[in-house]
Image (cartoon, rainbow, N blue to C red):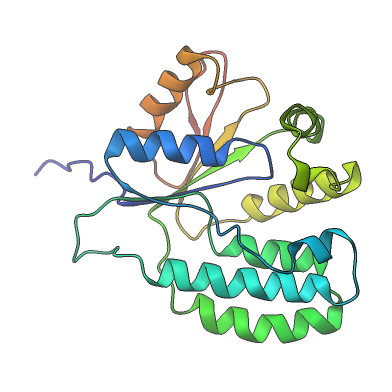
Length: 220
């Protein structure tokens, strides 16, 4: 009996700031006529965190954790629905940034809540990890010039990029497509976008890579 390809119903995109995940998530959601889930942005403690005020990192991180948990818990995904969902983050992102921004004492408290929340959330069928070098991310950050991103230092960008690389090197929770965006531009170059969308529409099992310049994806 033939094995028919069952397309993923719950797709999530991840990657460091200015790697293009929100843009690509919007495009994929439109192509698939899917529900789009966007990263929570209304965090009352974020400005205090950027100003390096005492305790603000824990407050901002915990606020994000609660918002992300509420958002992902409400998703209609799984075998009992045919709805397709495209999110521009995974809950593990919250833990990744907590490890960067919180003290050891704060992290011990955070971990207790994170483990409880994570156990109640669905896992994506497919995660698309968009990666880029810190140098490329810095250039895109400066080009964008968003007011709330001015305070982000080069050292912080490098630390975040390194944390993402480490996390996804060990990631096995779902099928994973790793896309290096340093040499492609799916926003301004139509051919790059079409090739990437074609790759996403094909079966992806385990960890695979989308290689730019016309190369095919390869299994890990």
